[in-house]
Length: 93
Image 1 (cartoon, one colour):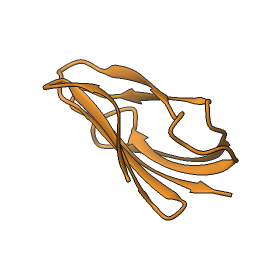
Image 2: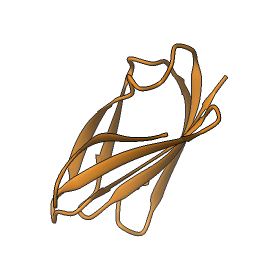
Image 3: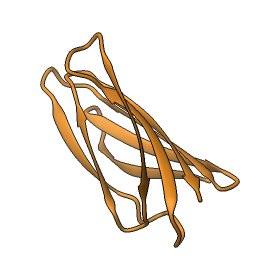
Image 4: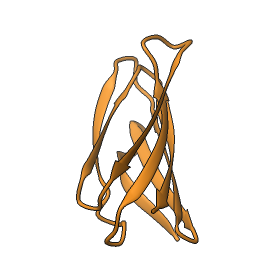
């Protein structure tokens, strides 16, 4: 199961792919200035999930690592550096 979560051709894209109860979500951004994306996770079935997120850090040489809970309908807001991106694993509890 693969889903287009958001984006615009030639600018940015976020794709989600599911295997079993685990979703793998990744995004890239292709401009020379940063971008904030507000992702709708309404494709997730009802329930509670844990998300492990690796995103851009304060500079191009660093990363942020975050683990937290979320529920469907909750938006995931991610800050991407210029030409940055992120990767996430979402597991149902």
